[in-house]
Image (cartoon, rainbow, N blue to C red; front, side, top):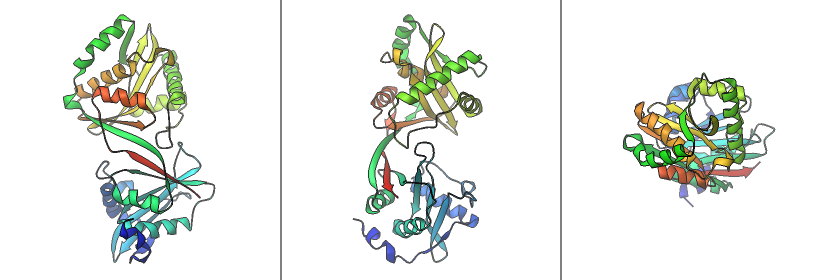
Length: 308
């Protein structure tokens, strides 16, 4: 057990609620805590009037050296609160205990999410009595090196079987949007899941609004019928895969691989530099698809759980 955890209660920290003036320091701590995997600005951190959110900071002297955030986990676990920590690991236990003294009502468990190489949080959660409940994987692909030519033979074989891949048009008729939504729901129902990888069940209107606002969709059709889809979201120089699904009657033919390969070729042509994706470790078919496409799997993400 790391020594700083066993002595955390004796560390000389002052604890208080987050203030807007803390935002630059908290942005630096959270960005460092995720090893720059995401970059946060002070605009991401503001005092919240939300009655179910709590953010604390720990100070050594006048310096903010750690932060803890307790908030509803979201659609993947609506009965759970999420605990996020960043900064000096020696401050995590006092921050956590202070948060436990004022937990919002109506929740039955706490969840924490960290990557296996984030040592300070990986050290804290088991010591605090959380169990390693679920694992997920993330992966990235350098689009400069992506070669769609490797999938030409697959495309030709599926074309001879009647399948064609294309970008889904926002101007598609209502029947097209209805078919897209139906396949989206089917895919969500069939996919292995854990709280971290479970996305909201979007209504037809919500799915259409999200795609129109920020996403790009590619589909595979058989004689006009949509039988596979993949959704992408641009994030700066990176494109993220949001969701991929194949109609059960058309699985194990390579359609998920082809529709994602076509989407990656589009992203490459549009000037994106990296592609990101991820899922629960239980979703081995999608892990195989992404391996074929050339994604490099990163360290595992771990979701920790503790009852309240």
